[in-house]
Image (tube, rainbow, N blue to C red; front, side, top):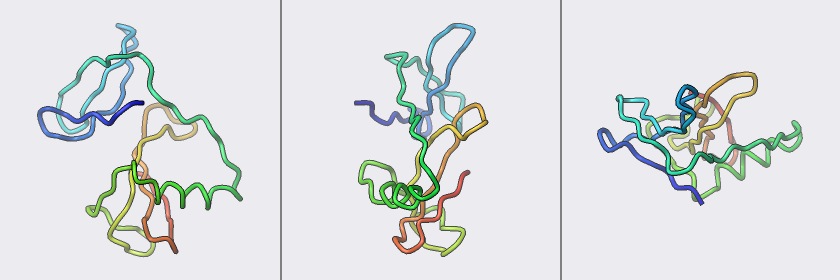
Length: 114
């Protein structure tokens, strides 16, 4: 099971980053220049695709997941609820990882990306 890694310099979350020239996996900070070589070249990637009808339940499951980090620093763009769950994933048609937020308000469940 993989665990979240944090930057030793600024305590921000480290994100997986492929170094294609050296053919290694790194963990890199987006706030500073800190990088470290991953212990393994394997990283979890969610390839499950959901239909429009399933998305509502998926968002509710994400918002209720106790293993995902929560923040009160970013309020929901729709209902202005002060708490959101955040996670990183690959957006379709884009390269690299994107930070997504899901509103913790069970009535709303709005998802947006950073």
